[in-house]
Length: 475
Ligand SMILES: *[C@@H]1O[C@H](CO)[C@@H](O)[C@H](O)[C@H]1NC(C)=O
Ligand SMILES: *[C@@H]1O[C@H](CO)[C@@H](O)[C@H](O)[C@H]1NC(C)=O
Ligand SMILES: *[C@@H]1O[C@H](CO)[C@@H](O)[C@H](O)[C@H]1NC(C)=O
Ligand SMILES: *[C@@H]1O[C@H](CO)[C@@H](O)[C@H](O)[C@H]1NC(C)=O
Ligand SMILES: *[C@@H]1O[C@H](CO)[C@@H](O)[C@H](O)[C@H]1NC(C)=O
Image (cartoon, rainbow, N blue to C red; front, side, top):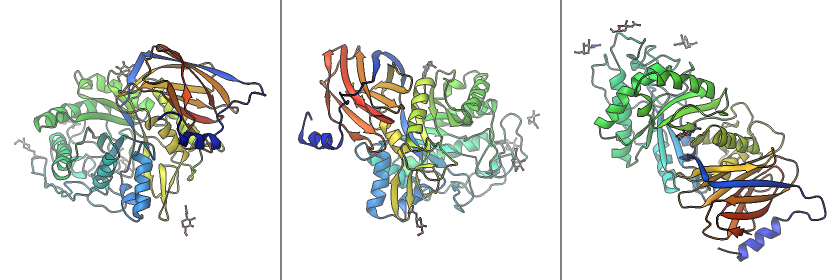
């Protein structure tokens, strides 16, 4: 669509002109579309530990649809494409636990496991199907722990290790192969019972931490050891296409330590598709030395009281803070995926992007920070070179698989700026650019379409970027 009627309506509410009477500050932005970096797999969230049930139950059909759209729809939400489901390890669904698919403890590792499937998986089956209807591409199944009976501490919480990995022996035997079989059985249940293809599989979560909830310890040597059992098991069982993800360390430093340990085992790293780490403790501000894709798979403001603001007091949970975090991870840490902790939940805190409370669904500025990337930068996009002449103006650029160029500009400064965007070595399919703006007054609002000038291979766009805003320009 070109300059249609709808745009006039937007122009009325969204003045997109630089004030010509005052001094005009400008920022020069240069994009080189042929200077390519990592491929993007997507952006996402989790609904593990029964959080999916907060959306599935207790909401009206309208509010339920709104929550799902806010997370997964390109038109009415963030268009997230990765869902990180929890694989159960607990004996029951007590509290917010995730129940195991083999909850009955057998006498030894040589016993046959008794599998059961309830078709719901704490709301995650329903959530996955609803997300897929809205464009979800990646279903990542991730275990926080093995079942108690497979571990050195005989609990699925409080740390402990898989019996059989180096340094971890148990009187009940070597549980590495049964655990690999267990993970494959989960993938098989999703495929055969629910028609859902799990695309990615992982078996660790924060293996550097001993927690009172489902948790299991592992160093990188032990991760490599188990990987060499899991990888051939997947292939043998007909699931060789499922990509393996490891190791979900708590922060970037622990992630680096585990990676170097894993790399000492010849052939192990090559069995991985994705090396994952969380963003807590040490932020993703450096690339990890690996040829594998790197995802930041969990991060959140765990301490702040629910704060839906885009930009208020510069608090940890605010939208613009998260826009900058995602920007840094993409540009400094070479990541191909970025996930928040929870998507939607009944929560009084900032651990989710969307709050479900008293039957009502409320998005946060954090959701719109994700949306500024994830609505437009789709799986298969390539990040390309982008520079800004002003330090507080952060810019990243991506070429989607369909050829569309997306330039994401975050203006952290206190003033509106005029941006002169120079796009080199890019052939445009059309001569218009659509900005989508997020700030305190806008949530991914479509702005007035702009015309490019110059020639293919050297396009120019002049646009206003509002103070304390994020603007995604789509060419
Ligand atoms: C984990 O923490 C629990 C509770 O503090 C403790 O009893 C246990 O020894 C710890 N386990 C490991 C493996 O460090
Ligand atoms: C574990 O068992 C192996 C093989 O039986 C043995 O070589 C190793 O010393 C044992 N390790 C520990 C920590 O008990
Ligand atoms: C499991 O079977 C193997 C092979 O028969 C045997 O060596 C091992 O001791 C058995 N383990 C247990 C815990 O029964
Ligand atoms: C970035 O990640 C890709 C894999 O996605 C890898 O091939 C490349 O070497 C990495 N680059 C840097 C600078 O780490
Ligand atoms: C939800 O309802 C409770 C009890 O009526 C009230 O105290 C609380 O403020 C409400 N929360 C929201 C977010 O509406």
